[in-house]
Image 1 (tube, helix red, strand yellow):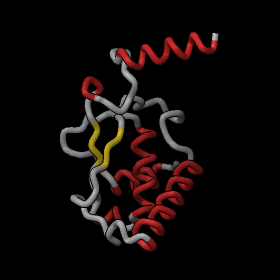
Image 2: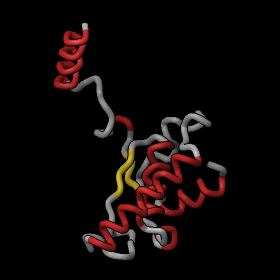
Image 3: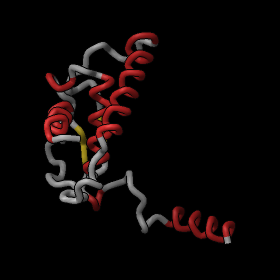
Amino acid sequence: PPPSPLAAMAAAAPLADGSPGVSIDHGAEPYAQLTQRGVEELRRLGAQLRERLVGEGKLLGGEVGPEALSLRSTNFNRSQQSLRSLILGLYPTAASNPPSIVVLDKADETMLPSGKCDRRQELLRSLDETIL
């Protein structure tokens, strides 16, 4: 997306204090960001979730404050943009009182596959055997 929507998205859900300052994929544009279509699709998804969770189901409150949501992302620009786009659809006024996104250092990251996971390696070997 052009810079102004990116700035709006960053304001809608800034990184939490203590999060790494630069994403892993920083400088890899255009591949490290969502397309405008991706942003729009995630905003629409957020709006649909809003209808269900705020409107019909009343599971979430109509407004969001920084303490109301716990947001987590990997340290990839596109992941953070995806989450921000979804939040802007779910809570269109989030930019005025934004929740923050927690991002962990690479060494502490648990949302990405790690070569150190024995169970993952076992499953990958099993898949290779099944395919071959």
